[in-house]
Image (cartoon, rainbow, N blue to C red; front, side, top):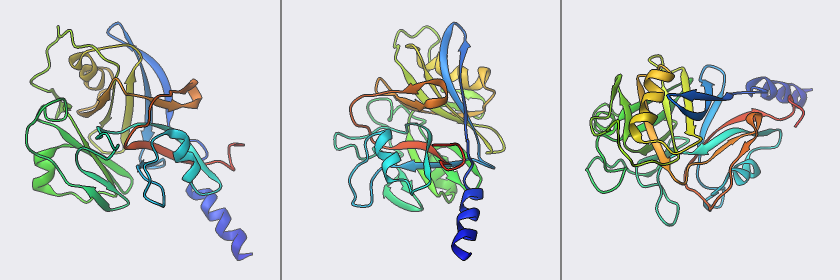
Length: 247
C-alpha cells in the first residue's frame, strides 16, 4: 500500500503533458515556439549522465530519465566548447559546473550584454550577466549564453534591422512574472534583429536570451519535430509522466 501511494503521488507530481508547441509566422518568417507554464511544467537542464559523460542529444536525455517519465520537448541551451562543455555559467540541480563569464570577447557569446537563463522553484528569469553577478539569485538550473536579445523591453543595442547575417537561431524568453517561459527556434534563417523582435513584439516578452545559431535544434513531437545533427552541449527540456499519456 505504501509503495502504491508513493507511485500515485509521483504520478500526480509530473504533468502528463507539459508545453504547448506550435508554428507561428512573424514578419514574413516562420518560427516554432513552445510555451511553458512554470507553475505546472517541469523544466530542467541536462548535460551529463550519472557517470559524467556528456549526453549530447535528445534521445540520450530520454535514456537517463527515471522509469515512468519521458522528455516532453527540448532544445539546445547555450554555447559549448569542442568537448561540449558549457562556455559560460552552468548550474544543474544547484551544482555549478562552469563559472559566470562577464568580460567581452569574440563571437556571439562575447557580444555584451550577454545573459543567464535561471530556473528557480516554479519560476524562471532571464538576466543580463553583470546584473546576475551583482544580485546573485539562487538557481536550481542555469545556463549562460549571448547575446541578450531583449533587455527590459529593449532590443540589444548592436542589432541592425537590415543585417545580412542570417542563420537558424534559437533562444528563450520570460515574462514579467517569471511564470511564462517561451522557447523559440526560427524555421528559416533570420538576423538577430528579426529574432529579437519575435520575442518582444510577437510574443510579448520583455527579456529574452539567444542560445545558438546553425547548430540550433528542436525536439517537439507534438508538431512533428525531432531534429538530428552532431552532438551538442547543454540541453533544456520538460519532463513529463509517460504513464499518463500512453507512452
